Image (cartoon, rainbow over all chains, first blue to last red; front, top):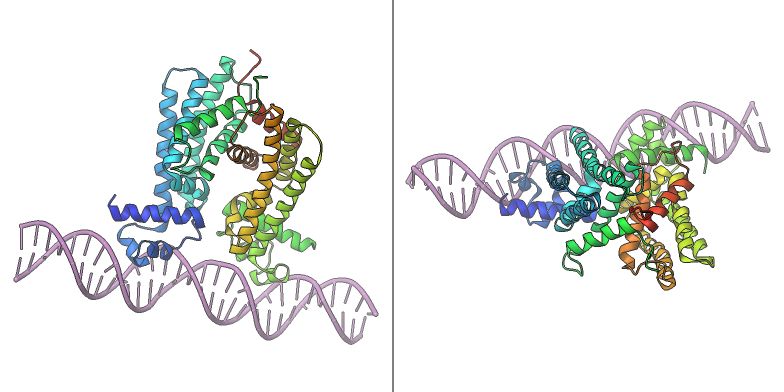
Length: 191
Length: 191
DNA sequence: TTGCAATACTAACAAGCGTTAGTTAGTGTA
DNA sequence: TACACTAACTAACGCTTGTTAGTATTGCAA
């Protein structure tokens, strides 16, 4: 990807993060990179491409993460921690893209929308696999897996609402906070 | 609110839930209630009003809930359970509206947007009050409150992604599942 | 039965949208 | 020098959008 194209993508994602996909016009993007809207088409093929490429690139990363974790022979608790860390790592190192991924995927066109949903389901199944393993091991409470996986992913995704790249926490630290919260809950069990 | 106006609101919210606010046109809404777009304006004043009224009506409900909980003299654990139940009750009995509230508030016009954000902050502060109480009592882990409150609310709000009104769970049961998850986490502590 | 709201309609407007066509200036290459 | 490529421009197209104006129809209250 050429530097100019990269600049367009980053600018577009930043705008879409703050104004939403639908409210970000090609003219907005163009003026933010100091060119005319029509000139954008020398670099990209359509507005939807900005969204689709972003969504599916991140989907690739998430899928790769969960597959690696589930390929390893390890116990459920540690697997969950690893999956959470992989997820958090991707979110925190692609903040704008993640925001668009999480909040704007609905604007994908019909066929891409179905593909997106399918892949998200697959990703959820990767987590469900870990949950089932943990239940068999007796370390996780017996839970409604669909409920828990949606809850866990929502918990993880909340990260993008507050995380600041040069703030107090490294991605690894955030992942640990999230894992602790999800595994142990809020209650202090020491006393 | 007249029956026809109510019908328009419910239809509009249902459409906005599936297609998003920006992609739902006045003509979409009109044809879904068997009239022309222009006729809608006999009942409502603008498209944004549909959004604003929905958002601020729900905000009222949420605020009322947390204020009632924080007016009671009770321990933090029970307060948190009550706040979670109030929140869940509102979500599950206003599914479409809640969806729009959570996902489409960004489309509010500038001044209403600021008001919305302020009121959301106040609501979060209501939860933070409970968290601080729990830390003083020694029953909650010492936590970064801002992190935890965003995490908790995201966890709660995930409900609207899977809840079915005539499904297996009552709102109260959902609230209990959520409270258990947030307080105790996923780990089985019995063995 | 008349009159008046309420509620629907048709027609249209002004603005904004994504995108295309055609052109031009600059840059590196044969 | 001649050519091709890249990346910018201006101008415009066709369409959709939320909304307004003006008008017809309906149903109830007097």
